[in-house]
Length: 151
Image 1 (cartoon, rainbow, N blue to C red):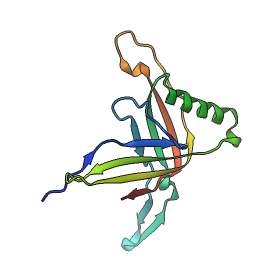
Image 2 (tube, rainbow, N blue to C red):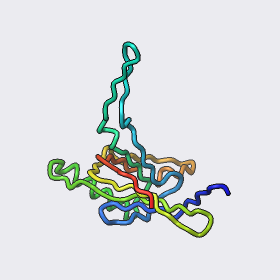
Image 3 (cartoon, rainbow, N blue to C red):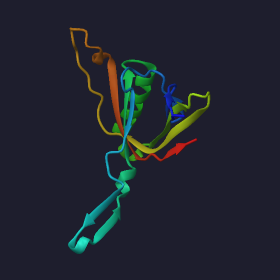
């Protein structure tokens, strides 16, 4: 029998708030931009291995409906960070993918986000030809760690 994965009903939670005003396309995207280890091979095939702790960092992009209550919530957090960076309370949360096996069983693929800050401003634009992107706020964050657990 083949293995299947049915994805749907994913959730993103930041600081105990479940975000529901998500937009279209990749409304939540979590990536790991850095390698977790480095390998260097030298003379006679001798190799050196080094753990890269920055490999634990993750980047989070969230596409929110512009002007929604979640947009207002995230914008307030961003303003607080900008107004008093040293006093910023780091963000935490979870990104949970629900995975079905085709037999009615559902598991969770969970990333536990810790030590998060906003890394970019929210951009904006005006378009008169029906570009729906003008109604989306994109939040860019970086977390110091995001271990994954599958249950």
